[in-house]
Image: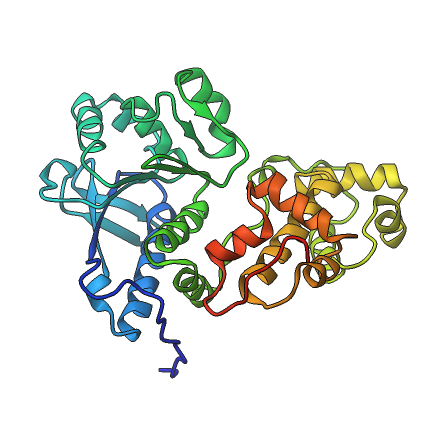
Length: 351
């Protein structure tokens, strides 16, 4: 077995200030496995880093229950069983996580189950849904009057069924109070990383994300996945070419005219192809990429605002500051105070 160089994280709660957190995952037959296996892997990775940091006292205690005990997944010779039904859950639960609904909506028609969801939602610190698990929370009334997310392709159906919920179609995940909802299957891992960050801070969550080779905060939103690719796209590999080129040239001129010339298209055709393939306009996509790169510099480097702005393609530090305030609701200096690795010097918004 390879020897892993796993760093010790010092910025964890002092002993006695926190304890292990119990996470109960509620699944159901015929739903996809990634919706709960992904978050489970995140919590397992967090436990690994806690153990190497000598803090196994903080470890997540994860258990799976089901709407119907027995096999909950069976595909091509691979099966998963959950022997404990949901109604046997006893004791304190820190985080309750719901997987997507089953193919026939049976769990939504189970009055006993929905009543249990409504009751237990008031007794947990956090209640979470992955993908169309938001339908379960909405059916139980947990999301009434709240902001929420679900998979982009289920948004219209969700809005028809649950008009009292303020559904947002773009975010990868949404928090409203103690309720967290996410988009498609892999977004459950993004949300799980966010929960780890909430529990143990940005430095620890960044280490867990690095261990899983994930973004700490994935750039973009659901829009990049929700646009269907049309037959006029000239090259199936152009999305990868666009991503690579933009990622490698964020500090350069990325106006539509410049990009169109590089990819041998007219500006009009380039904009149409880009938007259909990437799910966002060139301007919006590039802004998100630059912002994500800037966030990384703000979190991980001692660079000044001017240096970060230049490296990320902003013409002035004010442009970077405005981008932070418009997209994140905070200034770069406030963001560094909240999320940066320990030991970084304060960042002046005027630098």
